[in-house]
Image (cartoon, rainbow, N blue to C red; front, side, top):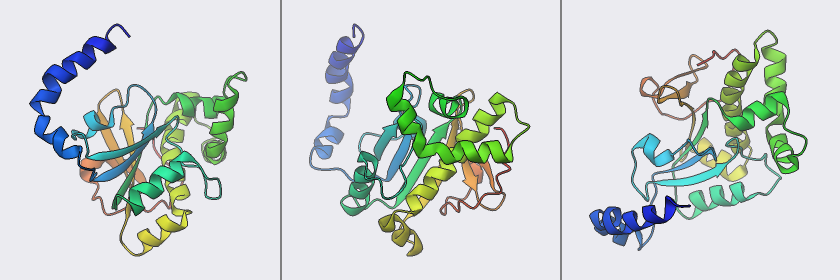
Length: 220
């Protein structure tokens, strides 16, 4: 807390004043470019990662960047519905990251004392099943690496099971994107349907994500 309070003063006296016109415009309403669903991990800063300004991204965060399957109403579903119905967003990005503690807990098993975490990770249970079935010879690090990628794809599939998502995608009014961020290098990878692999985002034409996957992903 000792660094947060001075930081607030610095923001008001310097950053806010430098961008005063932007903040005054934002006070009138928001018109974000995309819905960005990512992990709560403190090392992930979506606006820094994408070099965007306040108001550019509508952000949903939780441990493991999870979207519960349809039929299970959640705050995530509410935020997604608001983004599409009210803000008229045309792109949804689900961004996982290597070294994700939630995914490691999913693969290894969460601490038994973390009851809420254990319950939440059940929304990604199929990811563990996919990894165990398709990568039996991988070591723990490789399994966690691949699980991060598989999880992003599974969560995109969860999105597609929401009627108001599926209809928009079918009509070409909405595009879904699956990204993985590599903290060690600062690289961002996007799922490419043609190769069924995660490739550098700059090499992948962002025309929407087909989540059909051979389940033979490579370690990033």
